[in-house]
Length: 123
Image (tube, rainbow, N blue to C red; front, side, top):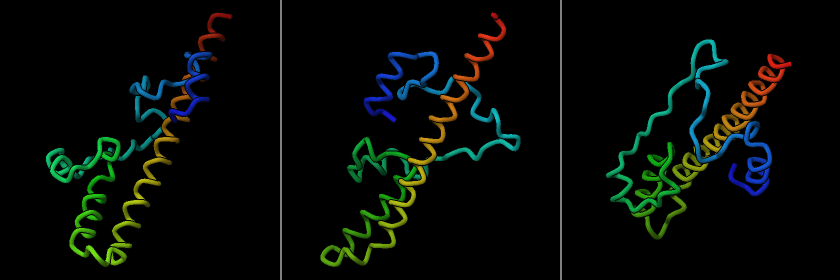
């Protein structure tokens, strides 16, 4: 989401392209008749700090990263025994990235919709 084309598009069309570092301007449940499942952090800040997890890895999958790192330290020379933990962590990261991309696209479409509605009301 923070690639160069997004930055250029944001500078050229700030009313149509969401800023990647700002919260959504729209209701998160808009368009979802039954609501959305709220994401919850399962790992605490203290757990992540004590495990020395980098700030960019402290997301909704951090609890799985903690499990993976614990397995690696427990089975050190034979880290291949931790392939299940690694798979679960990478799968969670993939799903999280897909969710982020979907949220970005949703925000972009809602901004374009808002602009269309405003232009129709004015014209």
